[in-house]
Structure formats: C-alpha cells, structure tokens
Amino acid sequence: MVGLVLLAAVLRAIGLNGGLWLDEILTLVESVRRPLAQIVTVFPGNNQHTLSSVLAHISIGLFGEAPWSLRLPALLFGVAAVPALYLFAREFVGRAEALLAGLLLAVSYHHVWFSQNARGYSALAFFTLISSWLLLRGLRRGTRSDFLWYGVTSALGAYTHLTMVFVVLAQAMACAILLGLPRFDKETWQRWRLPATGFVLAALFTLVLYAPLLLDVQQFFLKRPPPPDVATPKWAARAMLSGLQVGTGTALGALAGAALFVCGLWSYLRQSRFLLALFVLPGVIIVATVLALRQPIFPRFLFFLAGFGVLIVVRGALEIGDWLTRRLKRDAAPAPMTALGFALVALMVVASAASLAFDYRYPKQDFESAMQLVQARRVEGEPVLTAGGAVYPYREYYRLPWVGLTSLEQLRQIRAQGRRVWVVYSLPEYMEARTPGLTQIIRNECAVAGVFRGTVAGGDVTVCTLPPAGTVDRIPEKGGLS
Image 1 (cartoon, rainbow, N blue to C red):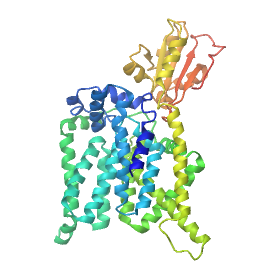
Image 2: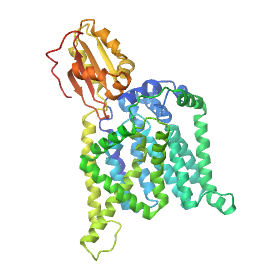
Image 3: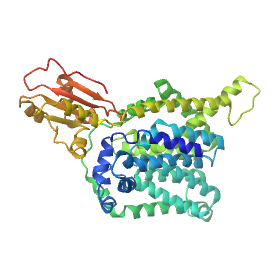
Image 4: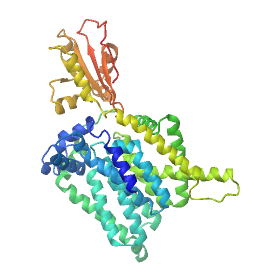
C-alpha cells in the first residue's frame, strides 16, 4: 500500500504546473482569490466547490499563486483515494483483489486527470469511498462512532459538491435492501437505529455548513438563466465514449473494458444486492434527476464513482480469468484469483499507464501558447477577438484588452475597419450556442494560424485570421498543430 500511494503521488505530480483550463480559471478568479470569509458565505455559481475552494485558498496563501498550488488539494485527495479504496474493498473482498483495484486506480488516466484539476471532483470521489467504508464497517460492527464519522464525511462531501446528497440517498436506499423498509415497530427500529443516526447527522452537518450561503444556493438554482443547449444526453454519451477510448488506448480497449464491467456487475449481483446497489444507485439517481430537470449533463458528474468502477472491472477480469482457467482445465475448482485473471488486470494497468502520456504531453487547455503566437505575429493595430471558451480566460485571468465576441453584427463592424482580424477560440459548441452562425463564418473564412491541443474534450485553442470585410485572404497563415 505504501508503494501504491507513492506511485499515485508521483503520477499525479507530473505536469501539475501545466496551464489552467476554463473551469479552473473560473474557480480561481471567482472563488479562490476571494477572502476566506467570502468563500464560505457567497455562492457565485455551480462552478463553486466550496470545500475545494477553501483548501485551494489556504494552499495559495502558503505557497503563492501557481497552477500547482491551486491544484494541490485535488492532488492530495486523489492520492488519498487509493488507500480509501483499499479500506472500502477489504470489507467484502480479499487483500490481493483490493490491492489490484488500488493499483488500477493509481494509474487510471481519468483519476490522474481529475487529481490534477483544481476542482472538487477528486475530493468528492474520496469522500464517497470513505463514507461507503464507514457505512459498511458500521453495519458490520454496530458501533455508533462509525456512523458519527459517516455523518461528518458525508457532510464534507456535500460541502465539496452537492452531488454527495444523491450518494447519501442511494446509500439509504441500499440499506433498505439490506435491512428492510423502515417501519414503526421495535424490531425494525433496532436494525435502523444506527444507520438512521448516520443519515440524520449527515443532513444536519450539511445544513450547518451551508447555512451561511443557503439563500445564495437557492437563488442561483431558481433564478439562473437557461444554460446553452450543448451538454445534452447524446453529447454526454459521445464525450464519455471518447474519454474511455483515451483512458484505455483504443476503441477496442474501451469495448473490452465495457465487457469486463458487465461481467463484474453480474459477479457482484450474485455476491450481494446491497453492494451492487451501493455501486449503481448513485449514478442512476443523478442521471435520472438531471434528465428530469432538463439540466446539462457532463460525464464528470459521474467521476465520483471511479473507485466503484475500478472494483467492478477488476472483479470482471478475475471472473473471466477464472472461467477461462476452468475451461482449459476441466477438473480445476473455482479459485479467487488465477494467473489469467491476474494477467487481465495487469493488461488493464499497462494500458491505462500508457495512456497517461497523452495527459502529460498537453496541458488541459493551452491558452498561453495561443496568446504567445498572437503577440508574436500580430501587427500593431490589428484587433484580436476571443470567442467561446476563450473569452473569460483572456479577459479575467490574463487581463488582455482583447474583445469578446457576442454577436455577428459586432464581428461585421470590426471587420469593416479595414484591418486583418485575429480570432482566438475554444470549445466551439458553446461558441455556436451563444452566437449562432459564428462557427460557420470561422470555418469558411478564418485562415488557421495555429491549433494548440488540450486534454479537455473540445478544449483545443485555435488561432485564426479573418481578412477585412469585402476582401479574400488568398494566402492563409502558415498553420501549425502544437
């Protein structure tokens, strides 16, 4: 376990000081830089992960403002998730299987990525594992202290991100499978007394933490304008599939992982319906709620289930390895782990570790390289416009006097000035949602000067030039892919 923790720390430290992406910049500018008293009393929007912002504020106060210090809390929670997964898994699997799951989590592309993301997602994944471990241990030992700490960790998870509320709800529903539905009789009360104490404490502690900003949270969710119609379920499914291909190396690897996942689910169903409910219900509840409320859905909403997912695919690999061994040796008895099962897990570990090269090669979004290209090639007096996901970073973080595009009429007026126009944009789906028709103009008329890769889906930063209105840029800028 010490070796796994050290491995996880090293893999998450590589490239930690790379360029920030849009959501990290929003977090830094709108939350982390604020006074601590303001962070815990003001809710600027759902980009606020309060506990994460508090810890990042403290980190920056200690070490100075830099990408690595902003991301340090996320890294620490990401590393801590490895022993947390082991503790949780040891409640229902053997030591070898728990260690293999910890190894796969330590090298997981997506877990490394989110552990280097200055947001609260790695903390939420950690608190999900710890609260699940405390719930299982409390049910096994019947001790009040486990459920007291369950209430504390669940509240801290909710203080990080309100998704934790759905995790607690799913855990309560799983307990109903194990203990039976709550009824007003002595026998049922004896079974539910301690778990109910944990759930009530989780609710009370969460209300206490959110009390200073409860009104802000309510106003935000009731009065915010409709979000752009970009993160649809169809879009989320495509983004998740693309992310799985990156994390496993190829589409074939993603397909093989899906097969192992299904096999692992079946194995856990045979072992315990309660465990299967703990694994599956949180995701089902969140997706159903988001769809019912017609809210945007992002694959990262389900990242907190990463530990559960690792346990399921490891179990699937071991089950398939055992099945193949028994088919090859017809007299062999079922075994908890076979050489073939171990080899399948090792193959997943190697594939996931190899995919980390992509994460280390590129920043999440490369705003700085795009900025340097414009500053090196731009002639004095030529206007620079930003669009999509590039508007906020250059205006609020880099403090550049570049104009954010808000309409096609604005673009027409700037081009009418008779000078070449530079355009820097990212996340084109949002650009098109906010300014319909802009994407078509850029694709048809904007000569690409450079495309700077990023690991965020759709987060490449593109620099291009538009000729003045009424002219044709017959000799495009020499493009480049960085």
